[in-house]
Image (cartoon, rainbow, N blue to C red; front, side, top):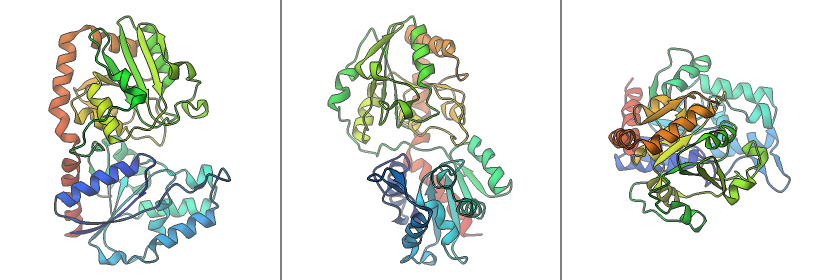
Length: 370
């Protein structure tokens, strides 16, 4: 099988790491994969503004200029809110092989919020609706997709895999090395990833203030020191602060795969206090924890509950007391902690890149054979 895999091909954001491990897994399974993708989001850093609509369109046209999509058996396309790739289905030829959109976002805000252009936004909608099939990263996303693609479009539900490549060795970055030192008295909880509106740090801090058992939590990832993106000023937490019985520290630094593995393997429990947000269908970072047998405490948002299953605890959003109670019980109750960790280890294989790629490949094959 020969696949044209379209999607952002750079070092920023959450989609490129997924595409890297997905491509590697498909090739491991014997598939010929060729990549086509943008080198960054359509934003001019020097002028501090997004590109014009015309420039975005020109960039999309240039991406397809030298590509014969009909030289492939299938097109696998990937884009989120801001990626140029969202215009490609509108521009590629009517005669083409089957095209499958992996639904990384439930809405596409580039031509509404950032570069308002109703005609191009409608072109994106038509492009998505015209896909031959979809891969959704949870049942929640599949249900929401019906508003765009209708109830009858072929779809596969396959959870996002870990984006830590197989064979990666942990590397302890200086910025968090001390935080990852084991502590018998204070188990470590962690959350990493880019800051986002659905990551509820206010709820996390309120929960920490209610904790009674001694614990530690680290939040790591880019832009957590930017109040406009984090939703609040976390300067005290960047330095390290104690709230209730919990030591909380924020490290506003990007962690590569080796550093993420160091964080994950040092973590006793992952913590995801999220709030509902229209374009969010579920966390990819959770897969890194579950793939390595780490239990997860999370709020019941999007696909969180189906991902975690019995390998963690789900609580209602914006309820700091229930989050504090879950953290305290995890620290206090050894048997509870062991049961969750055992369930997480049992679920781990479901979050490998090869497992995900094999399911997608079977789905792709069924479309080609139609």
